[in-house]
Length: 441
Image 1 (cartoon, rainbow, N blue to C red):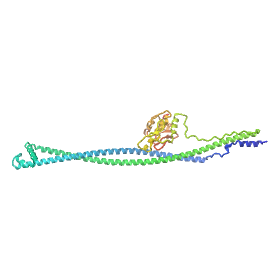
Image 2: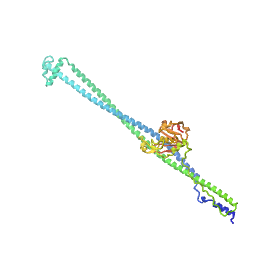
Image 3: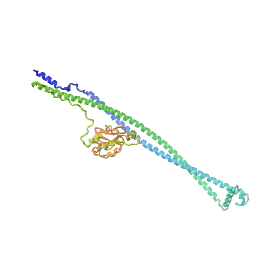
Image 4: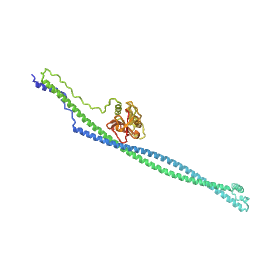
């Protein structure tokens, strides 16, 4: 005969089940969880600080990039002005040389005419007769000279001495032309000197601007690296907190299951103590504690347009930024920009830029917007920034033409930020943000 009390004890032990034969799962302490949260909060604060500094650094970089463009155009203008001044100076030098040759030739013609007239007059005087006597031919040195004297005699006898006045006037005019040409050459040389100095100044300013832009680009890159490192630390810290919470939840779940089993065992033992024993104990019913599985990082909404758009954007977290990349069907190869994007190889890489990500996100909800953030800013109903809701678009820069992101609520957004980065979730940056959000759905 089996004593009822002993039967109850044996029955309770048999129903404890194999689930409690092993040690319980580890349980995170409150201090561990609090410390993990504090560490994550510190990392989040550091990310926020670096985000603000990076935003300012990138804004400054954009200013310096614009300044480089202006300086390059100024240098181009100075180069063109110098080439024009050099051409003008060369033309003026040619004109001055031609004028000098003409003036010298005219002066020699006047001198030769005077010498011939003086010699003719002397010969006529020496033979004691009026000008035009035959003795004026005696001094001729050659047949050509004789012919010239005959012509001169005819001219003198015909009262044509005013021809000398004509020669003299021509010489004067050519001398004046020579003087004007030389003055023009002086002016052209002065302009060339000034243009050359302006070009040296413009080139030097361009060099300084490029160096400043490169230095700022280095600072921005260093900040991006620091931010990426701290973001990785934040992700690790958040993962650690999630792990501790999951560990606590698993332990609580195990403890609750154990409590239910203990209560059930006690109930069965109490029932067994009041009922006659049976020949064969039935197989105790045992249900192990349900296994723990963490929730996914992102769960889509109920199929509404806003949640569809957000889900499509979130599905590409980690996809690289590619300038000009993305369309209604997904990421695409980027395009050349002749500068920063090219240096990161965006033109041969598949990805999204900021407006391309918005195109893809809202296309899933049946809304098709152009591939330019400035046009996207005016593509829907604009609401004050303080009234922004989950699924609204946020914009930066004049007319919203610098950057766009999708608001997730609680001060967070999903964006494709810049070349060298990838699609990510980040805190909203309020530096340079437009005063209105755009609502499409």
